[in-house]
Image (cartoon, rainbow, N blue to C red):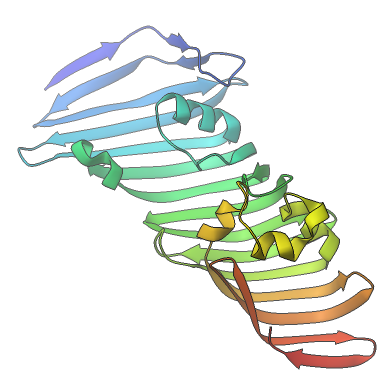
Length: 273
């Protein structure tokens, strides 16, 4: 058994953060052919603490590693900035703000770290995020994001879109699979959707989504999703719809609706699109 102890805290300046982060003293141990370290405490502005522990088992064929990260309350933009400073892509170019509770673990071969497996969860509270494909951020009042290998599952989801409230769940077994979605919305208008996703509102929503691609609609080319949608009240221009229910599929920038049902002008309508 051998030990290496770092006895003094260090301050690190990270691009994208106004204040430096503080790395507390840490001990690294060599025990029975494996290297263990931690907990390494990374203190972000506002005294938000992220704890990291790790273990590496060197073998001739692979260096097996396990890294754990825990935080009771962390600022999302601080986590994103720190990850990017280390050369990691955390949620791509999506802009995140707000608080999160983190309990994550990564396992894999250090020499092929791109194939690592991830497990654990992130709980979001009063957060906001803006993918490049959207014109404005979405407000996430709550969400629990669970990871199991390559699968992702989002539960307890509550999102605000303008004055509308969206609730539901979604999951994806692997990155190349379509999302499975179950969503409920209290009220929504076509204008609110247009303001959210249309990069050039003067062209019209459907022409933008179905027509010639632009830089921001590239995300729509890659998105695949299918599931069920319910909207209590929906307005498309002068046409009010209520109790709208439909199964849907989005694939290759094409939207199809099956089992579509809604009420309007005193009658009930069914169909597909």
